[in-house]
Image (spheres, rainbow, N blue to C red):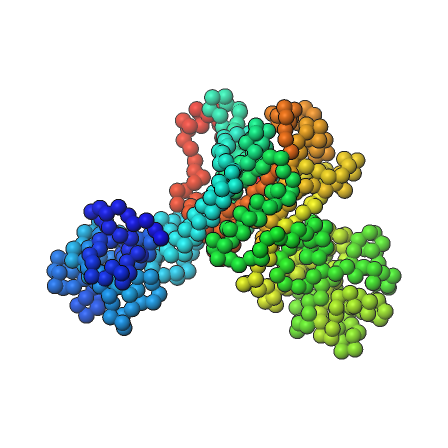
Length: 584
Ligand code: ASP
């Protein structure tokens, strides 16, 4: 129950709190004109405040109030006072909480007029997103935005309350700082006092939270704003909010245990029914092999099956050369789907979008044989063996990708999701939660090894073979979305230096950029680990919104613009001069 507002000249109750228990009493409410209707000599106004909507009725026998009501237009602001009365049964509106009563207005005080809004507030007609962002103060009045921001508040509050009860301290870390590598480009802020030097906005509080563990603040959290200057990727914001957590003297189980309890509460706040923890922990290699993704959506089947051994040794050159070169042949049984030849061929384009080259197909005949351009090369024995692995029955469509293991996994993972969507296989009311663990520590990029999570993650294995090293990282995945990730960290300077070395950082560079961390690791650094969750993404998932922009009060467009304020904007000559900058 919401606390009532302090009674003042404008109101003595929230509009949305009025119900039949108040019938026969006087109430004063304030808000915006949501709708106004003239009805046979009566004027009805739906008055909206943050709590909801209440119907005001203006009678001609209150001539002053009635005259004022005649001038009211959508989004005018007013305060009104009158008697709360029960509606006639035929006028009850079951769609709103206050639908059994109305306020018969005796006096009204117009507080502000409003121009005609650029789009209606009172209905969810689709409105162009640029227009919504340009007039965000109007857009935020709409129900859908209000619900999303109220849910966001509930999520963040649940996080704070749960963590406080678990003895975590909320500690702020700097926004003006030095670059921390989370793999993206930094936003830079010029330093006026010493032109040529720059602050970076934090990509995450990673190093500060580790330093806090070394300082003995064994349980830290922060609702942290992070900044990453990435090229436009769908549904990312350059600044975003994460729940950032770090704990001292912990192993994976300790972090995962608290976070499972926390996240179960967060899901419950939104009424999302998820399996009770503990949640499955799936090794990265298994996730890639079975679902072709490190954030698998396991709500539907179409699992990937390795059919390389079954098909080996055939006359089909493509498969043979891939297998000969150490690659794989993997397949999906798409089930009994009526797909035309051109639809099947069209799947090539899907796997190409996911980095693959082509997909081969077969449909299973009544007698178990395959109808497929490649069947005759494979031979009956092999197709029968592969069919068995795939659980093939007559009518099933089988889809094959042959490639290097990583490429085949990605391609089939993309294909699997596309087919799941296309065939309507993904249930909306069933949820799947899991941890992905045992990630590779390093991945091979164009310029050598990079850390898959970040270079402060504790590795497992030998530095003699970086490609085989695993990391002590874990990601939380819900319905195919990665909601958060973290790791146990390195806590000795020696291991930290080794990792820097593998990713191609010289001793000098390591000292120049991370000397403070390497130093700190020499003064008593306990084992520690943590995690961060993307709050925008979590709220979007819980609110069932397509875009994280719909759960952020003032987001930017995909290209980083804020149509409301016009940011980013030019600065004037004097500001540039003060900063010692000249534009090229
Ligand atoms: N700093 C990491 C991130 O922002 C999370 C973590 O390792 O705690 O993704």
